[in-house]
Image 1 (cartoon, helix red, strand yellow):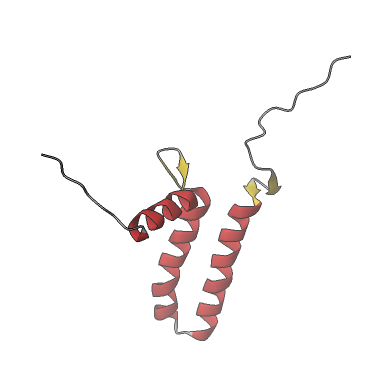
Image 2 (image 1 turned 45 degrees about the vertical axis):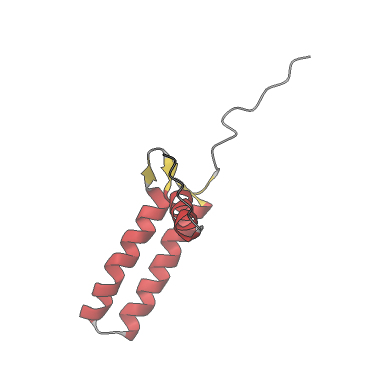
Length: 91
């Protein structure tokens, strides 16, 4: 008896249309924050704060650096910056 072997087990499931649950969470969270900003601040200030928030959400949802997803890359960068560094020089 032959069994079907699942392929592409590394890929996340598409939950909301063409988006994974993480991607949808990043975009929905940023949209909620921008929505609150537009109702609490004046238009100019809300736009000033919403553009970077939206850009960061899009970068987290879709961005890759050398094939590595942006959230993993940012966590590695923060971990490297906070880790104590010791440089040894040998003559």
